Length: 472
Image (cartoon, rainbow, N blue to C red; front, side, top):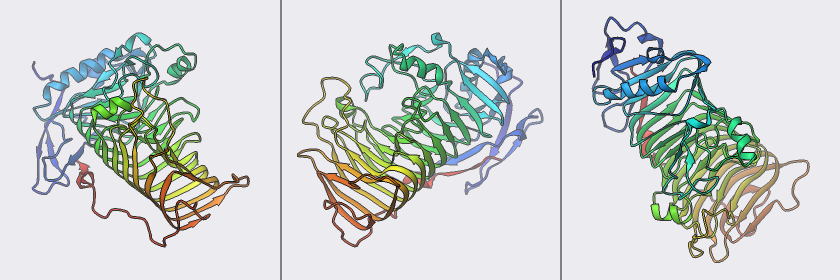
């Protein structure tokens, strides 16, 4: 296929030390300076993100009136741009305006760039969302048995994908789906606003995501994922509208983001019951920092409940929550199997909370009747330090499992100021073991004072070596 004459090509010159990249545009590229491309480099590897070709959605027949369908324009644009994956990569520019579209897939070595005041708006034409297979680590849809409706934006087996812009918006028009969900009019599970599967080297930044049908950002079976400077918004009473859900992913950074959610702001997952155990891919090496959350009925950071493939080496720091149910919640149950271990959270500021700490060992809700009653989860080496909370109803509700105590829990340097009507029991602990230090109100007897701070790793995670800059 010949290269469209309206595409812009530029050449890139890489210095030996990759920080900023200079590039030279050919004369016909008039729109080049209207946006900045993001460069990223993993370790000593070659950089990604700098694209040789750029195209505007209008070139493929896009109409930004918020009424005309742009499904064909998006699909045609990405299909055409995909031919440059091995020739310098490509970028699709979404100009200002409301771009109504059905679902579309992304491609490798590709940037989706939303300019300022650009809105990609999900179609509410039910026929545009075919039923697709459930995730193998779940065995069925999350809402109900069987498959699930197509995600809005998605891709599989991709590498070097950037979704970014000048704080443009991606709107899932979730009310359409929430109403059908509440009325039990859906035969399959709702799709997610953005899902990338079996992919690596992903950057999502500088965008606003609103009104997802269910989970908002869902990288699953992915490696090397950065989600930075995003805003995720959903009504606090909307069903299952998690903000960011890394699922069986490795090397993930979530930072400098603001989330308002009808469910957990961030939920780390790894598959459901026997399906997750069989798939066997943990979520691991995850760093969360600089995140603010509002979630009145759910957690700021949740681990589970779908954690059957395991969750380990998770770090979170500099977290703020307002009017949320719990700062950190571990959710599991008999039959889940898997593990949650080596969890480190520090530097958390909380304002108006039901709980500060919450561990639930009886979170049922199984995928089907074939779960294994002998599959007990391992919950151990959980470290929470440097928390300040005000207007708190209860400090902690920590519940393990009979014959499967949750062990090596450490809580240190915590001050929780109580609400005007706190619970009579401030610490409810059973089937848990660990220590505490400098905690007020005093911790439960299962966590005796030992006068020592909790651990927090000093060796950086691999994702912290990723460098993100501008191509020019």
